Image 1 (cartoon, rainbow, N blue to C red):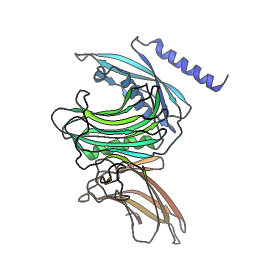
Image 2: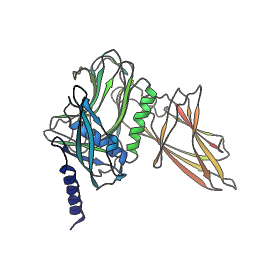
Image 3: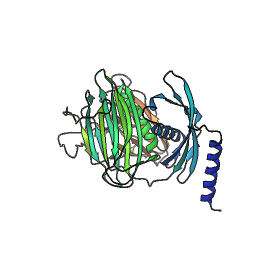
Image 4: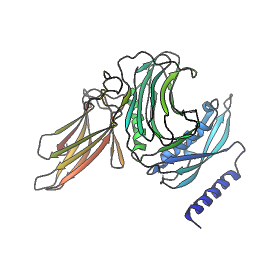
Amino acid sequence: MTSRLIKILVLASALALCLRSSPAKDSILDLPVSGYPVDGMMLKVYAIERVYESLDEKDRYYAAFDHAGISPPKNLKPGESVVLCAPFKMYNAVGRPAKRKAYLIVRNIGVERAQDDRVMVSNDPEVIGSPGTFLSEKLNPSESVRLLYYHKGAGKKHQTLKVSVHNPNPYEIALFTSRGLGGPCADGIYAGHKATRRFLRQERADSGRIIKIPPYQSYTVAEQELKDSQVSTGIIKLRQLTGRGATVTVTAGKHGEYGEKKKEDGRLSGVLDRAYVDISESYSLGEPPLNIRIGESPTLVTENKGFDIHRGNYGLMHRIKLDINNPSGRAKKASIFYVASGGPTRGIFMMGNSLYETGLLDPKKNKSEKIMTVTVPSGGTRTVSINMMPQPGSFYPTRFVLLEGSP
């Protein structure tokens, strides 16, 4: 008996055991994912997203999910499968709950990893007071795109901000997607930090969901409320796996009625032809501190609007490589600080398999935070790699400062 057949039998047995005591309204859902691996926390998130999407739109408001009731494995590697049970409650008009369960067959397909090719930005206008379409761009076949949006609501009537992908083909297409959302929140720095943290948690393992969009249909990748004077923001990866010509849009409106894009206010909405900034520096202990500025270089403009400069380089992944040399005759320490320069900011950094988050930094108050101290052996070199992304809501430029010692 092959290992593949054994896996299928085990999944079928587990599913049968789950259904034996299931009420008639329970559902069975397919959940294809990809990641190297997909960790347990993200499996929970993807399971809840999938169940939420399966509900009728009018029922979604009345659903409450039991996060603790979902028991995923620690990790799900490519080629592995698992059956998850997702309990939730459906409340009726008078607030009485009915217990429900959904069973999900989760399969890690292991889509080939790929770098992002372009960055799409929706920040024009930043403040949205009336319905409109604020970004509409096509996805190229097989390319990977990173989308960043940052908008603030205006007015007493709440609007809905939607990111959608439309399939114009007469056949089904497949889409890989991961997302980090923040808000609605009055604190734009916190909203942007939350979105960036959620996105980078998936980015480090290239994890996400596989979505199938029927012919001539649209799929809502993200949906958030736009409240008066509050920020809704997100960072989303989109990769069209099959088909061609899918369109991604960012729209806002009331009751699903979306108008045309409103007049620009000088902010940027469009496409940047690169997704990464690579920085490589060498530093020898005993030299003056090394400063690396973030959010100033390179100067980027959108493809179709040469006058729109992307200040701050928001949404671009900065891959920083530092070679720290010790020419002395004894081991020495070196420290790396993250410093606010352009205004209040926060940072989150991928260092190996770990994420490091700073507190709130302000040039006028708590200006800097030490993020790392390393020991460099005598006559040796220590290489440090940091991946980070200027996050929506924070102010730039910022600086990394590398110096000798451990202040």
